[in-house]
Length: 297
Image 1 (cartoon, rainbow, N blue to C red):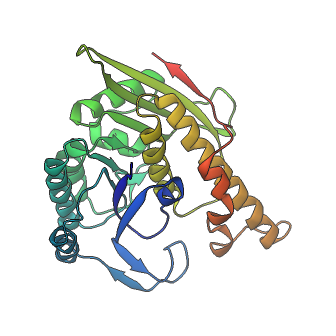
Image 2 (cartoon, helix red, strand yellow):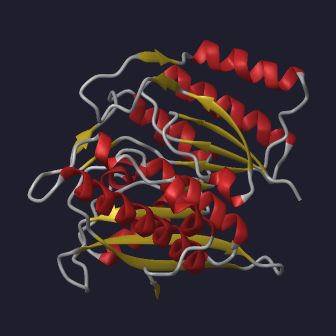
């Protein structure tokens, strides 16, 4: 059956169509290029403009979606309009899944105005089904610091209690077992069984670090997690292994190409670090598993 996604985010990366999803994209920004470059020009969509576009979709009766996918935004009214749209779409389709990357900041610094934090905490996260915060964002949303794996599990449980059934902490400062060249990510998924009982599947993934700054990896990760949790709705371990493996292949192909362009001893520039998406089509569709997840209690 056709699976339809409404994507409301910056026009950076959306790999969902490669995996057979029909995607309607509303670009929250329309820029000449991403902001990793020295200069960019373009427009930012307002909440009113978002409302007008959504009304046009509704008037044509094509607002029947299985997923909504959102990422970075800097405006509270825009974010609140997203929540209104998600709630209306869920009333029309109670099984709709909202995938949210709650972009707030990283390593103690916020990327967005402070007034977005309560909107995410009180309005966005409660209607989300899948969220992909980093450690800083997970700590900010729950008010709990992560120092150990046990802390991370408790933070994911707190996020579950706020609404989402699937939580993936995309990166953390926890010590990796494989050595300093790796980052630790964690995931948790609540399952409701036919008899009404509940269980929680939790996983730990260690992913190789890459010494470069990429733009669009968060968008790609959220899109891939949407796709692979759709294919493996009750198997977070496999969905995470597929998602992180796609990320590994895309990033490795990108950094290798960037170093070839930059030349020996030179750091690649933002244009050279553009994600090699088209060249990674086969890996996106069927990734060789290079990051294995382990189950944790």
